[in-house]
Image 1: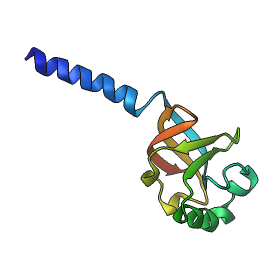
Image 2: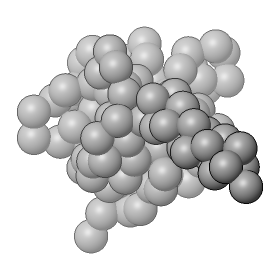
Image 3: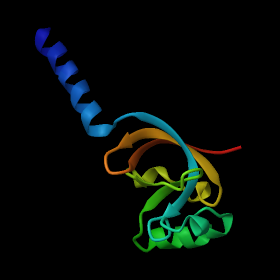
Length: 110
C-alpha cells in the first residue's frame, strides 16, 4: 500500500514539473510563427489563410496577446484548429518556460 501511495505522489510531482506551470487565460490571436512578430498582420481576420498555409508549410502556431502583443509559443500544436484562426480567442492553459503555453482550451472571444 505504501509503494502505491508513494508512486502516485511521485507521479503527480513529476507531471506538475513536466507539463506545466502557472495556469493562465490569455486573450489574443492565433498566428503562424513567421508572422507572429508582426502584430498588425497577425491580429487580423484577413491573416487566417496566410497563417493556415504557413503552418501547413512548416511554421508553428503561436498566440499573440491582444493587449501587450506578447507572443506565446504553443507547445501542443494539435490543440489549434483552423476554425479558431482569424478571430480573437481566449486560450486557457499552463504557462511554460521560454514564453510558451500548454493549451487546455481555445474559445472564441465575445
